[in-house]
Length: 327
Image 1 (tube, rainbow, N blue to C red):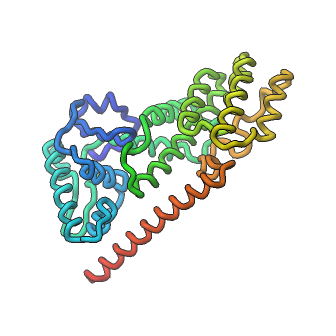
Image 2 (image 1 turned 90 degrees about the vertical axis):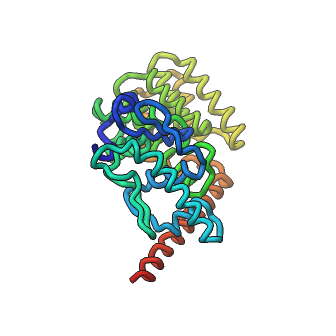
Image 3 (image 1 turned 180 degrees about the vertical axis):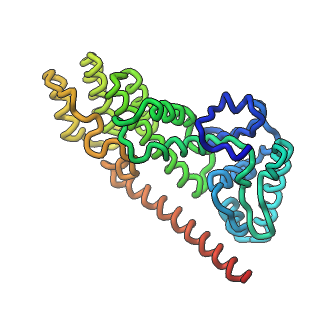
């Protein structure tokens, strides 16, 4: 069986198959035949496996991999740590490999890569696949099958990527995946409004607010859904929650768009055909969207992104230097 990364195979089905199941959303988990797989207990060993799986499409220079995960200046020591962690990963996973799959990790003296034909189910791969399949399709235009696949994908998001890991590479990937999560929830809210499934749409809105309680656009969407469902009182309460949250989180007032919407609801003149998302509905939320009213938060995000980019550039340069030294 090839690397299981698409097709919408859910975790319950995988548990009945002879496939390794790796869960990276929330707390790191790895199972085989529905039971926890032992041998990958150390934090760095888990981070190594997670890194190889997230970046599963390419090989990694050992020197770069060791620096990313251990970040120490002593290369001999970090290469030793890497060898030990690789041995632990291979020892734990190889007994579970199906005939013909080969080992889970392809490694030589200089390069390491996860074996693309290893039998494994990865929640992040399923999640990314569902996101990619609906790129460019507005939420209101989703077909039922695509909406169902997206709903299964957001259910996989049991928490942020590798909770408890604060390495630069993980923070960067965590932000990327959370943006994808919020984008899919946005599309599902649009789909629910078109389909008249207001209660389900409100549930998606609550999921967004658990990640970003000051996301004003989501509060407005929930106000619309409450009103369309015939519950004007809850729509007005949602606005009150928005006012309190913006004051507590950012010390700002609601935007003019939110003020116009609440006045329409109070006057019972709300246009039910008003687009649920407004301009840009269905697009991926950007870090700027999520820090729109707080310049300090925006600066923190820029600093974090620049740090991650600098580290990535340094890693790529080291890969090139290694390749040139071997030629």
